[in-house]
Image (cartoon, rainbow over all chains, first blue to last red; front, side, top):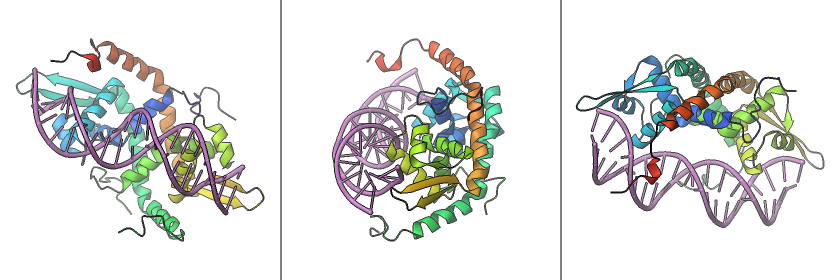
Length: 132
Length: 132
DNA sequence: CTGAATCCGGTTCGATACTG
DNA sequence: CAGTATCGAACCGGATTCAG
């Protein structure tokens, strides 16, 4: 049933899961694909990615740096400069993420239509419908 | 139809985001890759996927069905039988997800090593650092 | 068997204020 | 400029219970 050599992702304690979650988290994907084009500084990333808070950006960058996907370079000027760029590992990964994002982008309208159809088949919508 | 080459994923209200979050969620990936092999019934999925609760399984399946990625078939026997299988759309998507999972699986030990190296460079755990 | 509804603890998130 | 500290709000996920 299962191909030998592939780790069992289905085990609850599979070590792949937390890493997978890191990479596919809401903000990590945006950070990684942004860095795919060129290195960015902290404030450049914050400006580029709509709606991210400083806390979440710092947290996401720390996780990605810890995972060895992003390299953090500090230039001790005044004021200080910090640059983030993809490592070789990150450069290897990001196209896979980008492919996924591209797929979703291309099928967004189809999926939205499916959602609308699904919602329309519900006779009495839950509390949301009454409430305006 | 969206522009596949340059989706503005960076806008805070980009419609791609919630869909992307749906399919990359912790359980959705496991459900989709499981269904990739063959259709499953509810209890079969629950048995196959380690650590998932009924609530999360039902919730995940409902979201994926609503997105048009999974087809839900009810056989009105007693007791009732419900079968889930990938739609054409889901069949198209899942390989991308599987590729990502495969990538992570293959690089898990590398990433774990990077994490260990990163953690080793932290002299004092921040949480217990001296207060002023 | 399938899955909806409820409760509830833990985690996450965002806004703000502050430091080097 | 590049973060960290703190705090309340929001969300998530698990266990339980109940219904079709």
